[in-house]
Length: 412
Image 1 (cartoon, one colour):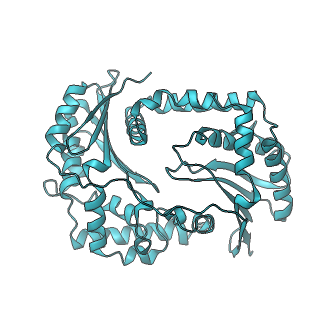
Image 2 (spheres, helix red, strand yellow; image 1 turned 180 degrees about the vertical axis):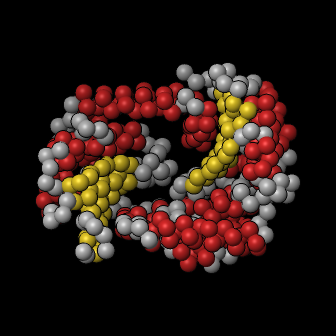
Image 3 (tube, helix red, strand yellow; image 1 turned 45 degrees about the vertical axis):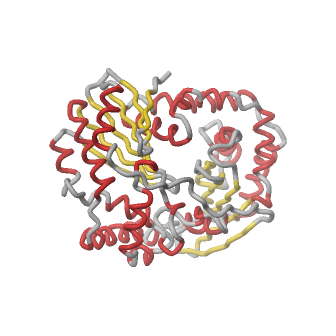
């Protein structure tokens, strides 16, 4: 059981705290509810670009990293479709350094022409390395563009094209920053050997004077229900054929979310999973096969990805996959399979909160979902999934008309 202390500033910043007396290091996590889904289709990749720009210095801290390193700390950040997360780990005696640095770049980020030009080049180069110059680099672009027609999940976090990044207008960056990098769009989480009263005092001191932006709930286009299967065939200079399927699932707030996650685990998590035992281990079809869910805030997808062995046709692999999906959807799942994967989830979650930084992020994430205290109830939700519930969800999700399929064929 993780004890959670909560406080909300007058400007809307949510602050959560957990005391961990086992170490003299502390974790400071600042989670913004903004990602690629908040972008204008004309300026994709903006959320990720701004993450880079956040390390370019602010009004009272020209260098972000140097003061933190002098305080014995380290930091990093990442961006998803829904979120942008920043964190610092440093001695608890120097925790105020993180409050100062994060509040200063929330309130006064330096967005001059030089900084923007440098980071445009850095992110454009990252796009080339991750998308254009590696085998299968465009696969995420392909399946997202096929599975989504209206929702901004139809493009990946890195952006639709390198040109979007290279031509990103300075005005669009400033507007995005002012709109979303605000206290009422963030959750601050601190874990370490420090009391909640001190954390809340420091939060008021450093963040209390920052004005809210009135962000409100994002009004995004709703993705229409997919009522027929979609297919995309491409040929690329890659070593092996790849088959990818994307099935629409519920959003993160749905009561079926845990069942969808367990469904992907039953299919492919571990050596005793359906795909491993009945497709991979039997040999002759695939060199790898996996199932996962995207886990996004809005309605996401369950992905099945298989890399075929040389000379194997798509049809034979699809038949093997369909056999397993039909069994699961018909109720051919044991309580043992569900319990095993629920145990694995609980174990992974327990290990994930051992470190201060991961615990701080998890608390911030669950607070963003509605209440940081939900972290203590998540394992129970997974354990409450029955075989009947799993079969019902599988039957609703694993339908051909709900599926978008990419046939990624080797031209070699």
